[in-house]
Length: 92
Ligand SMILES: [Zn+2]
Image 1 (spheres, helix red, strand yellow):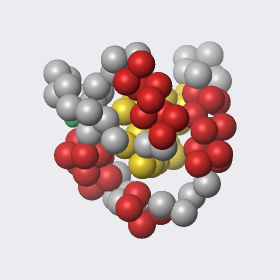
Image 2: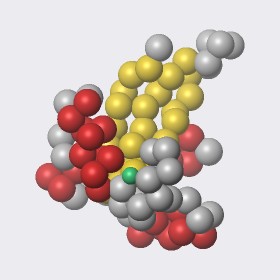
Image 3: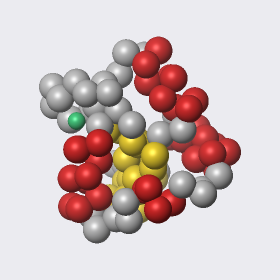
Image 4: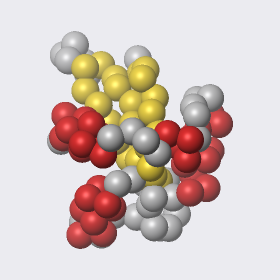
């Protein structure tokens, strides 16, 4: 079971980390530079809820937002970078 689908504009720090790890868009062999971070929570077999995050390029982020009826993050730019960063760390 998965829930809590989210899509965020990648902040500077996340973008740098992706480049350092040589991570491109997470979809197949798309390989485009990721600019967005998609995330959702799911329950592992042991019952623990974990957050999965994937970097996405613009077009795949757009598909993700349409699939889950998410607001396009251009309208959410005011979200504090710090809250996103700590939220990403939860997933690590
Ligand atoms: Zn892509």
